Image (tube, rainbow, N blue to C red; front, side, top):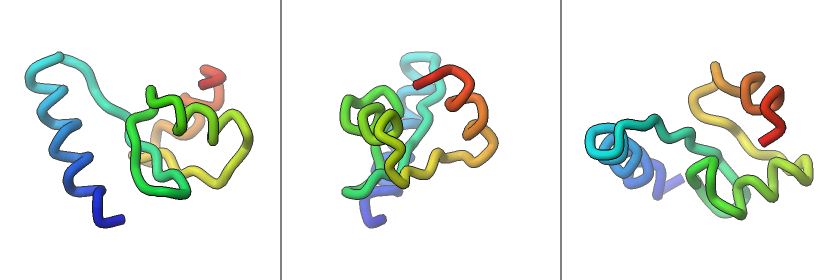
Amino acid sequence: DADLPWEREQAEWNKKHGGYDTLLVKCREGFEDISSTRARGELADGKECEILPEAVREYIKLRGI
């Protein structure tokens, strides 16, 4: 969990400079952007990943990401 503050800072930078929201996923080895290969793979495999913020969990499931 030590990398969460750094990931959140990166997400804020992306929002300011790229104009998009970053959905962070807590995977077994830390936090990653939802678009990362490992995060998508772990979600697809049904691994215990936590979508942050909580409110988007169902959205991600419905989208099949």
